[in-house]
Amino acid sequence: MAFLKSIEEKKFSPLYLLYGTEPFLINEAREKLLANVLTKEEAEFNFSSYDLEETSVDLAIDDAETLPFMGEKKLIILHNPVFLTSLKTKEKVTHDLKRLEAYVENPAPFTVLVFTGEYEKLDERKKLVKLLKKNADVLDAKPLNENSLRKWVENRATSLQMSMEDQAIDMLLQLAGNDLMILNEEIVKLALYAADSKHITVEAVEKLISRSLEQNIFTLVDKVVKRHIGEALQIFYDLVKQNEEPIKILAVLSGQFRLIYQVKELTARGYGQKQIAGMLKVHPYRVKLAAGQAQSFSSEELIRIMEMLAESDLKMKSTGMDKKVIIELFLMKLVQPSS
Image 1 (spheres, rainbow, N blue to C red):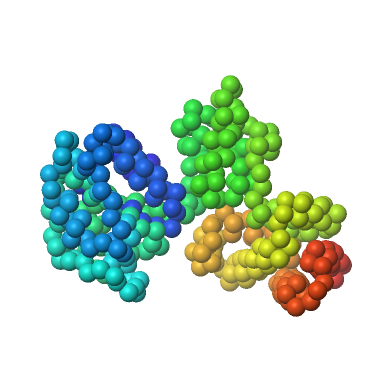
Image 2: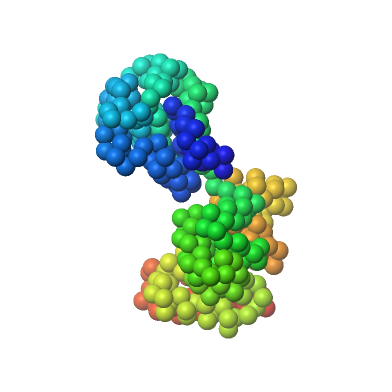
């Protein structure tokens, strides 16, 4: 990523704006700045961090305009700049935003000032946002689409001096999901395993990567689609052995079938997968997988399944019936000819 490369090359901007709903990308950029702007010795004197929900931005500007001590640069990170959004909050502190606007137009050359917040979007109508978008290096940390996610996995492997075959990438995404924090941890694990060969195979992924609850549910639904009730039940029993609560399993099942139904209906109305992902606020990769499963059900079948799930949920919460048995009955009903 060019944004990170410029930091690694120590080509710093006096202003950075890091925002979005993908916390791993924000944290990665923040860590790169911490590692490259200052040495450990310099950081002791020239690094500051302010929570703008608790502290006035005026103090941060005073700090930014003060010359560094025993070094050439200062690094100041401003967390939670909610005034860049349209969110309504009860402000605990007062910010002089006019003064901040003036600073953004003419930042101190010896200070690297970083605004960071996990906000889906900023209020583009505000003058301060427009100034930051114009003058700062901006990272909009959006969830990655399928192609970007695959490229990201490949790049993470490369950064660890590893190659990774395409099938291994596919398998990793299927098993671990699309959470970048989890994916990064799993890639590090795979790299340690493949330290001698420097090549991550699909066999290594199958051997080392544990399935998330969501992925197990996805596989369970796939078994239902193929009418393999024995295999579907075995996945359920394995989840119970792993101490997953039946009520949680039912909730994830409900979420998956709801997603399948929504994707089916929106596809029928002519929406593309990327549009659907935006409308439902889920990752495009999940939409792609749900679209594949949706082909095995009619809309009427999916409505009936969701009604069955609602009935099962009610039984769990209002009767003394064994929760495990409730899910067993639900799964067996799913593979009956009427479904």
